[in-house]
Image (cartoon, rainbow, N blue to C red):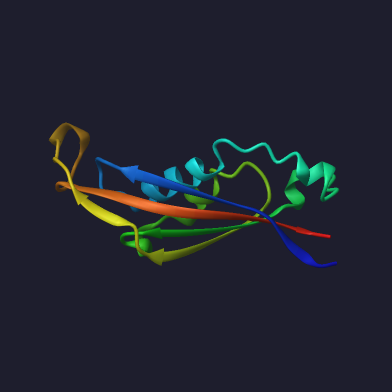
Length: 120
């Protein structure tokens, strides 16, 4: 069998309050997969089970060492999942709101690429 890339989807996620890179990363992944119907997984690639998909997620986010990997991958409903984290994204100055548990004025922005592979 040969591994082939079936689709790549990109997304962006923001944590406006709380300064949590995991929240921004998970939202970026959710945004990347939000409007997909991968019918070709069955009709073209011939998979019998959606868990046969091999999913590689790459996320660039401020403070990637703070990301809780399991929470980000939990956004994906199916597949054999891996997460590659790198420093990137953006920090934008917003407004701290104490009742929202803000630590400072930072808003964290993450970008994600979700690659779906199949073995054919």
